[in-house]
Image (cartoon, rainbow, N blue to C red; front, side, top):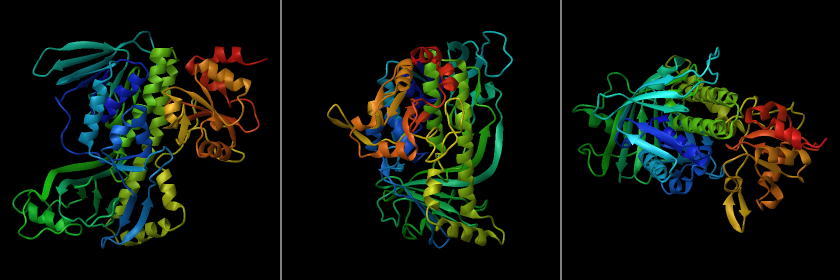
Length: 531
């Protein structure tokens, strides 16, 4: 059962459906929220959309963007963070979009899946975890979860039971309260006015996002689509855009980008689609799971929007958790597999929030005498070769070592375990397709050498294919990636993260004993391995 039919909740349902898991999505609103909110995703998220089967539809409504610029108060470039049109995951590294369009696309896909059902106009009243046995640990296996709800307009409680509950119910999450989770404050809170506009007037714009770094009037600007634009301003308490003087104040704020005559008024050639006051916060839930109840998206973490990772983080949650939940529910994997969800996602969420806070700090620099100096330091650092590219990569660092990320001490080459496999175009059955279309929704063994007996044993135990990169007909991306990592083969998880490697010149994966018990494959792997 999934509480909340926003992009994260619906994505979780679609991904579970791909693994054969039935789900019910509960949403208190009758329809999608019609106004724009999130406007950017990265190439990793485009790959998740691919895994849900909606990437082609999304491509028709998305606009690739070339990156981010930090500008000073005079709109002079301090630093530029370029983003590739073909990233590691096989898609543009930055894509602009309209959230209501994405939500409609996802719900249409949900309606086509027989494994999923959406109930709208339903308010969840409580979530209760039932104990199946005495337990001491907070995440020990427990019984089914009871969800109490009320239909729209009814005061009568109804009770439903589920094997697991995913709380995708936002910052004010009832699910978070139900598991006793508390917010950890990461020390950022500012009030900003977000303004979405549709206009046919000429707009002076770079095709990427702009962050105006100013201690007195920081701002963000971006073109979202052909005629839609977004401004975000941090306004002082006495700078109000409402009331009779609001339009004139707005005209002054957008003047660096678009000319509006003094006698102009809101109309067809400059339509304010939405104005909203937001408090940007940096917070992290201290726990993301209790038994079979999980937190995802804004229920688990809140980030300032300065690096465009708010929605991205929630969709990563869905990708990380759903395949593990499917392994437990459908294939008898060990309950401990679910412990790796928070262990893997929480450090990454914390890291991204800190990057966003740092960019927010660079935008304002504070209001003391050292502010100008600190902004100058940022500009100088960003002119060092490789720094801006490293910042972009830093939004998706390798997962830390754990049961599902096996690492040996690095001797030479790059450590691949915990990183994503690249996704080039390949040839399969006479067609040009993306790699993940060949790999499917499960594990896969990808090898640059003839499969060894142990590679075959692992693949057989997991019931997954062993694929030679030489047979894929790509442009050499995969062989080069394995070579730089000093690996002959890798074991890919369903989310395309490298779980284990066969170091070059060896015969075995690093440590099947560590991860096999979580997947209930230890006995089969041992039996299949030659004496």
